[in-house]
Length: 333
Ligand SMILES: NC(=O)c1ccc[n+]([C@@H]2O[C@H](COP(=O)([O-])OP(=O)(O)OC[C@H]3O[C@@H](n4cnc5c(N)ncnc54)[C@H](OP(=O)(O)O)[C@@H]3O)[C@@H](O)[C@H]2O)c1
Image (cartoon, rainbow, N blue to C red; front, side, top):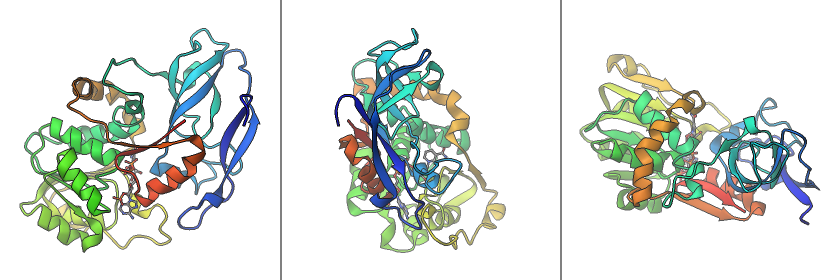
């Protein structure tokens, strides 16, 4: 690749089950010159997300053999819009490529929040990932100080953010599930969970009942299926479930058998509510108010796995789906 060449990752085929590198191509093209009202951005940090797996199945979201989209952070190289100046750092959605032409309306400036707040924060704790955790806890589960919380996929981006934010919000007993002993240790030793379990170690309902013997008030579930069933089982009356995702189902070829206890939602007066973070972007300032002072002081570490090199973006994405990430999976140029 020369300085005049950009690379775009394109999906070349729809997967059946788990995707492979063969479903993607790295396509070279000349770096475009900005048109009036646009700027040329060189991307420096990319987010790879579980929803990209859902996008792989949909003609409406990702068209085959076309540039894919995803959240990314880039630096303006050249501009024909005075509102976007060379050197500016911007957040935008034209990820999965080394360069992009963007208009001002397609970007959000990266705020300078001072030392202690690294760029990676804007695609993890202070980005859509952290906002999903914050909104799930505060607006959907309506977590109150002292209440006991279960978080599934707890060692991932949303899960670690949820654990750390729940501690700041004064949560009571904090229980998490994850896919390995290494992740379980990370949750209890580093993130502040009181108990955690590896969901491979037995029926999730039994593992959760053991980790939360006195029951739970709230759940942030990103896995679905058996995890959702276990959550319904462990909640006390008037418990709340913020259902953020179903990563356990995204490449499943059959419908999940669980939750088989859905009717207990009635008997226990549980509130089960799904949500999309895109409907709650107005909560970002609140998240900043809560998290930024602790980031600046060093009391709130970032949980990120950063894969180096744009050429590794497909492997980073597949690795995230396989559970190779601790915290938010990012790719750096
Ligand atoms: N509603 C929204 O607006 C919104 C926004 C952001 C994210 N989400 C959802 O939130 C969840 C977490 O997203 P994230 O970005 O933070 O991803 P993440 O948790 O950082 O990465 C995905 C994780 O899923 C786990 N996983 C994979 N297959 C699994 C399975 N069969 N059963 C249980 N866990 C499995 C893996 O960890 P293990 O090693 O623990 O298996 C992996 O690390 C996803 O469901 C995502 O779709 C929703």
